[in-house]
Image: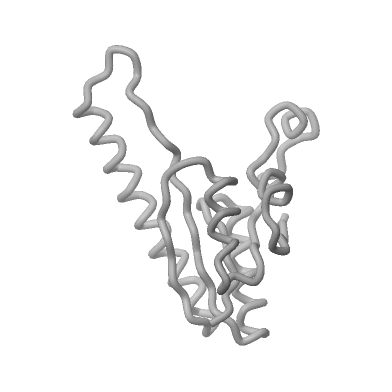
Length: 140
């Protein structure tokens, strides 16, 4: 089944992307794959492995809750929904997942950074646009 991959992070821009992507999926009669990428956390200097483990667990729980809430919003559009939680570099992981044969399109939000911040730091959306071979819609 063809699906639209929608990147979600809980930001207002990602909520707009969810609404846009789920509406488009309903019109096209395709499913939705929601993907949330957690940051890779590392052990701070002098930190304990226990603290690192607790932080990773808390991030996993928060990511799972976010995906569950976003699944509910997407299902309200009458589309089939699945979700994936990953850990690592968001642009790379989103672009890699988009290469699957069932993914037709990527929809994601733009954080709305200013011009200087975007030039200095880049954005996940900009990186995905450059890395991904599938069409990418960036929603403001």
